[in-house]
Length: 341
Ligand SMILES: [Zn+2]
Image (cartoon, rainbow, N blue to C red):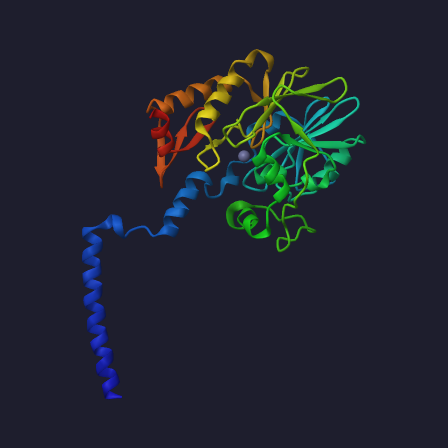
């Protein structure tokens, strides 16, 4: 007993000595101590995913659009033109937007969102015609409900095809439905424990400048890689609308992930800028479904500014968020350096 307490005393003295030593090291070398990896991750995600992001909702544009009621409360649906609907998911951080385009013979769904809601039921609430899907690219939040449809088209690119074929497993998706990622209850029938994005087979492959005919309305495929391999935009010439996927949306443009090719991204924005006379509005993959097209010129200028070493930004863990009017750009600092070389 005595021996034990004397051992405790020795430990106590040793512990106190260690604490003094450690605090000395921390004061002298704060950079090696003050942030553990988890904290750095949290800070990085604050730059990308601000806490309580939903407090800024609803976004002002929605008050100017015609809201349409459907049976699926996970979505908000807005009528943009007589035969074009935006199907918006405001309760999940991505604020994904899919689009329903109704032609005289065919119906196209551009992107299928996160997969949390029943998108097909929304489509069936709005039209009797069978719908086929066109994916602007194959990030998870654009292919979530592909499996609900028989016809799936994506760009003829090996990585795009593989992602759709592979699907996404339950574990990889958990982050998207936990913590601050959602702020309203998930649909009652939705089970997070078994949720996945099932693998499906693309039924048609798109080429640059190809046309998708809907009857009295067509969509031109514009190949715009950069945000991801095989990213496309779709031009509805008749309605003068450009569906941009993630190549542009009014928010922080993702130019930092591993599958981004920054040089291709810049070229793609320049390509869209060269065709500005053909469209008045952008229907983007996130946040706002109705954005004036002039912003594309400013995105082109923004990339030039960044690559020239200008622009206002905050940086965490090598990722910079540059601030512009109506959009931001998230980019890795090493991308800027490599671009200059
Ligand atoms: Zn994306």
